[in-house]
Amino acid sequence: MDVARIFFHDEIESLKREIEDANFSSYTILTDDNCEKYCQKELINLFSQFGDAQLIVVPAGDKNKNISNLEFIWNQLLNNADRHSLLINLGGGMISDLGGFAASTFKRGISFINVPTSLLAMVDASIGGKTAINFANFKNQIGSFTDAFATFIDLNFLKTLPEKELLSGFSEMLKVAIISNIDLFNLLSANEEFSKKITQDIIKQAINAKLSIVKSDPKELGKRKLLNFGHTIGHAFETYSMQNDASPISHGQAVAIGMICETQIALQLSIISPQEHYILVDVIKNFFPKYSFTINALISLISNMKTDKKNVAGKINFSLPQSVGCGLIDIYPSENIIQKSIEFYHSL
Ligand SMILES: NC(=O)c1ccc[n+]([C@@H]2O[C@H](COP(=O)([O-])OP(=O)(O)OC[C@H]3O[C@@H](n4cnc5c(N)ncnc54)[C@H](O)[C@@H]3O)[C@@H](O)[C@H]2O)c1
Ligand SMILES: [Zn+2]
Image (cartoon, rainbow, N blue to C red; front, side, top):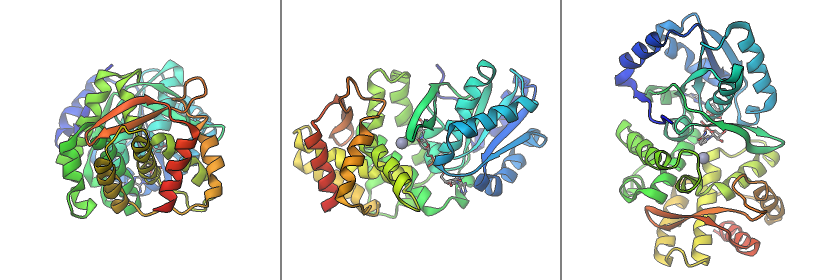
């Protein structure tokens, strides 16, 4: 498994050469309607060979990472692509997940490149070899482990990304720091506007932190589960918000809520000290606005968690912080403890 074929803006010439050398039979660009508007022209400026590519555009938004768009993409690919074609996923994590899965299944698998245009996709979704669609109202239920041919990261794409989405990506940077890298955590939590921390150097550090975990456990049989910190409760909030809010919270905002609740679970289980619990909750709370919900949501939230892929024999699985920069996997708290952690967030 080759999870690390990442090219930054200054390495574009070697990526272009690799694309030429691979002799793909055709190019197709998959994007969403925002990225078509803000990023497609820039992509063609950077990679002139994609000028004649077939273009597939799906509507933006995570609810569109679904089976009907997957079918739409397969149908479009039938017009132009064969087994030696290249799919270029231009967009955020919704596009790299959807396009990666479409490519990994079309004619038993064609090559694809991720060109992440959101911070979240740069530091997380477009690297590490996971693809997925949402199914039956639940997140990421169907997918594959398939590596991209390459990922191309150019911070210029972030210029048009809304601030809310930038913050969403910052959440995943914070997550990987909390469970694996205290130095990165110290950089990210320093008292300064979060947007000042979005530099190529810090993005590289976050990517390397993720890749060092992924390389040691590509198929998520053990250590990679650490990256799920914040996601058990986070996905439940993301699904809840998608079903109940006119303007649903971002993935990263949901993960931030999840990280606060799950750190509190670690405290209840005496996995983390009260001091470190305080530091983590304080830092996360300062970056992310409070999400308001009625406490009646608890039933749906717990029921959402029961469909989580990580569960074993019906028990809800958690990855929790043990201290700043270090985490534990495969913890199964009782429903009562999970509920208390959500009440704790609600009371903040
Ligand atoms: N496969 C993985 O390992 C992995 C890891 C983390 C997250 N994910 C998935 O990634 C998705 C979240 O990714 P995301 O936060 O990038 O969401 P997204 O792709 O939905 O993008 C968020 C919004 O930003 C817009 N956008 C993206 N780039 C833009 C740009 N440069 N200018 C203007 N608008 C832009 C999009 O159109 C969308 O409206 C979720 O589906 C999540 O499950 C996957
Ligand atoms: Zn995530």
